[in-house]
Length: 382
Image 1 (cartoon, rainbow, N blue to C red):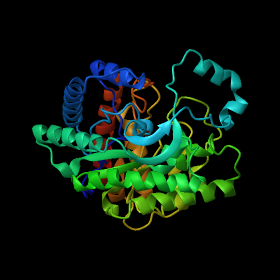
Image 2 (cartoon, rainbow, N blue to C red):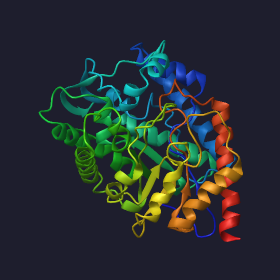
Image 3 (cartoon, rainbow, N blue to C red):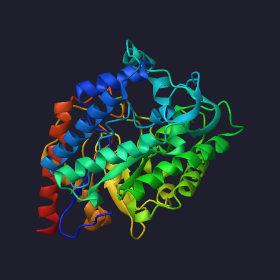
Image 4 (spheres, rainbow, N blue to C red):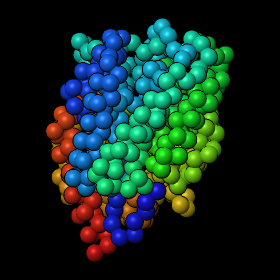
């Protein structure tokens, strides 16, 4: 982990827009159509090289491969692991949708969502080399751009989030399924660290799970679920140095009411017990922007770093750099300027073909992020 004492570092959550050629190949693969591996490899390598170049050009300090090779941030493992088949059952109706069924019916009308399989057999690697191919592409892109590996991070799904989007019909209990996922995903986590990059584990299950998968739970019951998910995750990350570990939680990267999102204050104490040094979360959208105040009541443990989202990831508004700077400064005043890295609420292409922010606008928003961080640095350091 890089920690600067003289300015605010910038990063983002992970997924970035894919080029059309790569999107077409990813979509064909998701439809079960044959895809030429060599053609895909060339398209993915070119996309990663361009993504790295653009992040460097804009001034992103801690950058990644944009998740270019993955159709999405969490169910990508269905293509890499054995044990998935069929189609999973839907979660209970979300708390939001119970209040606004007409809105969600309109939102989903005409949308094309690939069926998600479920676990129907023992989990094991089927294409472990896919992890190494991602690493190799990212290393090559960084080297070509003259960027040190310690500025790079890669993302991977958490066991809890994988279980949320890929249901279970094989393991006896939810915990047994989580631990089976953790056992295989540990290899991916360790490989990213061995390559010299920081690791970000994506954990929307810790917040967004309240709204749908566990919509029938009480707060006490959901906190027990968060404890379990974190315990399983920490065990899988036992060989990852905490200072090279980022944990991302969010409340769902969609434009909707979000009025039933669980408050950050109700889970923050648990999340801060994670082995991860860096905690990434939404802090720019209208539902969660006020929650910087929570850190005035829940102290940030020594050594921890926050990565608040200071750029919204579901609207095509391009934030004014001054507004971005104000968001950064609020956090810095509460937790210390050296403990803040400026990030984004979530990814700009969490599902490759269904981003709500136009690609060209996503890049403009990232430029606003770096400009805002410069303004905040001037204010915080003089």
